[in-house]
Structures are given as C-alpha cells and as structure tokens.
Amino acid sequence: MAYHKAGIPIYRCRGCGAGKAEPGQFDAATYYDSSYFNGGREDGYSNYVQASEVLHAQFRQDIALLKKLGAGSGRLIELGCAYGYFLDEAKASSYEVGGVELCEEAVESCNARGHDKVYHGEVSKEALSRFTDADVVVLLDVIEHLPDPVASLEAASGALKPGGLLLMTTGDFSSAVAKATGSNWRLMTPPQHLWFFTPKSLKALCDRLGLDLVHMDHPWKKVPIGLIVYQVLRYVSLRPTLPAWMHRMGVPVNLFDAMRLVFRKREAV
Image (cartoon, rainbow, N blue to C red; front, side):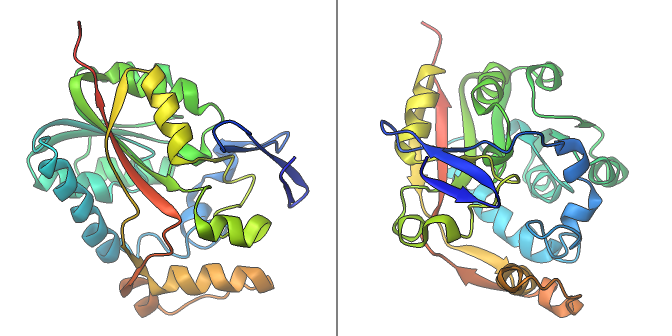
C-alpha cells in the first residue's frame, strides 16, 4: 500500500507506477449528479456552468491540437462530456459530435442545445455501441474516475476507425508535485479519483489495445479563479458560495502534474 486517504487504501504498481484506490462500495450514479458540478461536492466543481467561457477557451486549445495532428473534421465522440462545452467547440470546428455522460441534468442541457447524440449512461461498451467509425474519441479528466479503465479504453478503441485519434487528459502520478505532496496531492481525491496514471502505464495499456502514442505534454490550462479558490478552501473544510465573477475569470496554471496524451489507432494489417 502506497497511501491511505480518507480511509481508503491506495496501491501502487511497482512495474508501471500507476496507483489504484480501493473505496469499497461507491455509487457513481448518485455521486456524479448536478451537485458535483455546482459546488455540492467537496471534490467537484465550484460552478461548472458559470465557468463556461473559461472552459470553452481551454477546449479550443485541445481542438487546435487535434487539427495539428491531422484530425480536423469527421465524427468526434466525447466520453464524460459534462455539459457539452467541448462538443460546442468541436461542432463549431466542423466535427459531427456525440457523447456519453452520467449526469442526467448535464445530458438534458446538451440535448437542449442541439447535441441530440449525447446519451445518458456510464462509459461502457454498451454505451459506445451507438458509435462506430469515429475519427476522434475524447476523455478529458475522465479516465481516473472509471471503475474499469481497461474495459472503457477497449470500448473507446473499438469505436475508433483505423487511423483515428484518442485524446486523453489525466493527472500524472509520476510528476514531481505528486511525489512531493504524497497523499496531499491535489488530484488524490478518492473515491472521486479511483486511478492515478503515469505516462508509462497509459502507454503500455493503450499499446495492448492497438493504440500508438503520438503526442504527450503537460499543458498550461486556463482555470477559473473560483475553482482554484474552491479547491484550496476544501483543505480547511470550507465550501462558501463564491461570487460569479470568480467563475467567469480564468488564469493560466501549470503545476506540470496533469498530462495530455493523444494515441492513434493502428491501421488494420
């Protein structure tokens, strides 16, 4: 056992360096409801909807990376798409979009804004059976939440056409910040985060699924001021109602402990 956090043991693989939390009983469908996005959960978002402008700006950077890697159009599927702000940017950039989201209120918001191929449910093979021959599959800060990331990535790979791209962001468990802060690492928040990946572990996992790493970085992110304040205050058990301007203003942040990876599905032999 590497750490013990919130009464939950966290184990680390000696080979690849990845970590896994063992929370016991955890009802994801109950946890990831609308309160997770509006300040009702200690480890959730302060106000996701009010931060939409900042989030849209950040997502445009991810779209630019996809275009740079040759996936500038086609069918794009986002897994764990929340309120669909990434899908907004993708649709505006000529992608045909769809997605899967566990929060029912978020799905309703997506549908109401014209994303009629966003469905309610968990990231699973069954959910992805609606989508085939995707040019891009996206998981933004999602893989660490999933109870079975291997099965989820296998389903994601199955939805991709040969040559298609898988874009993923998650924490870097091998980063200097993660090592220095240990169980106090800002991204070690079980039972919300169940997995703690390293570049080595994700590369090995995706290699087994026929996905080759074509890009990896630790990008700067524009983060809502409200979210920064909200996450800092959780260490002293405070969850105040923050003014709207804090959610609508973002600042560039990079602790180099969050990674962005893009994999390309191998062509059929």
